Length: 294
Image 1 (cartoon, rainbow, N blue to C red):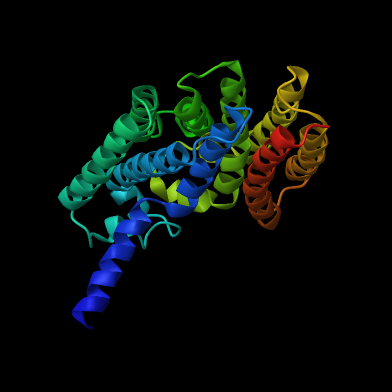
Image 2: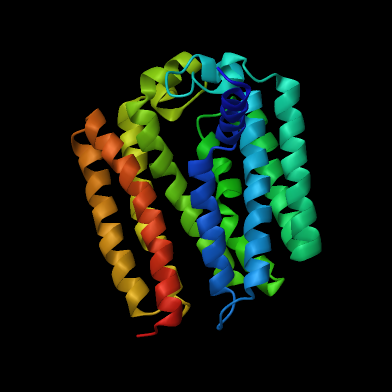
């Protein structure tokens, strides 16, 4: 293996520590928040700077997550190939990597966006990397519910970047992601329950059984459907969003009802995959509705 290929492979390992697919969805929601924060198009320079800064701090938080959970990851088939789990990257290297990209992200947000966005993003970093990963996740089966607030923050971060404020409308978007997180994650935990049993983490399907988890998925999806009606109810959005939210919500309810009534792993996998599409399309509908009022 050449030195170039070794270097490329090591870069790919560091890139994987930032959980790029999860980061992409979080940053996408933050960008939507940026556009919704103003009736006109936002300043593209702030959009670019805020996107970079939020991406860097999110990646830093996920790297810390990989560092803290490296022994747990090694026991799970889904995560065993991570460089952190295999010991290919030393813990000190991960910590330095996280510190460098996190510090760079803070500098970008503070100097090129505004201090409010930097502080809110830093608080989100602490909420995920410390409060959720270190304290809540190994302590309670409700970890994903309580810790979900940090993962729900991106729209507020994006809104703050443009408006230097976080009004009620931004918190509605945070609430939607907060309620979306449990059915999204528990669908994954259901079809990966054997993996989570090996991990030692107190995940709901392991501690309280599949039946209660299926009920929770169904109830949270009902709550999510109701929550997604709020932007229309407070005149934040119009008919394009409302119709999109109803259609997407009914599909999600259909998946959740089927999981509740007659579970199988293939269905849970499809539900998890749809939940990601659901959130992406829901926020895209908010953006379209923002500029095309009906």
